[in-house]
Amino acid sequence: MIDSQSVQTLSPVNLALNASQQHTLTAEFERSGIGLHSGIPVRVRVLPAESGQGRYFVRVDLPGMPVIPAQVESVSQTVLSTELGQGDARVRTVEHLLAALAGMGVDNARIEIDGAELPLLDGSALGWVEAIAQTGVTPQAAPRHCLTVTEPVWIHQGDAFVAALPAPETRLTYGIDFAVSAIGNQWHSWSPHQEDFGGAIAPARTFALAEQIDQLRRNGLIKGGSLDNALVCGQQGWLNPPLRFSNEPVRHKLLDLVGDLSLIGALPFAHVLAYKASHHLHTQLAQRLAQFL
Image (tube, rainbow, N blue to C red):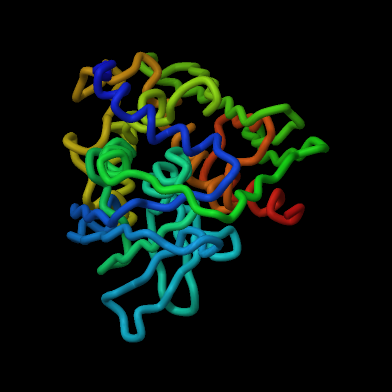
């Protein structure tokens, strides 16, 4: 379980999420690690950015240092992560850092990266959130533009779906259903007006089923995954307990949803519902909502 003292230290920064003006980082910070799918070491610098610039990536390892906006128009693929692209430049597994920035109220940030995939860190967004909290968040003069959903929007694929319903404030509710008993059917609902992202969502780690790992690696995926940066569940239970929350898997799915929805800018004023969804459905909803901006 997460230490309540560590959660309290993040609370003042998280207040920026509910502010009416834009925010950026007070100073830059840097983190390094390996990519989940590539297994390649990478270094990331996250720096302040001017009002209205939004969150964007810069591939400093490529000629001309191409810029990749963290916007729905940049989504290039969504196989077990969200990948953004601009021209020939790509950056993958962006959802955890983007969730941390959005969840902590950082509207504008320049993200310099020397590779094609963000580092996984411990499999959650906690390392990013702690770095933001230590660096600080600074208000900017420009107003924050938030989308208000006035009519229901639904997208489904089989029995999986995402939806955005009119609501007076932002709320995200997620459900998952797995055959393995250690996960089973889980639901979690989160509102940034009631709970800090840093304490309620950010610590939840990515997870995988033990029976799927060999196949995923044969397909060239999760080369950087390990018991140190992901929860792994078998038929007999978790291979690397303890969990940080009793429902950590569904909280991580909600974390991914925050990161994917951040591609429209600020989190919308809506009740967003997701069940057995994926990055593909998340980003489809973000694309649909972005049409109303």
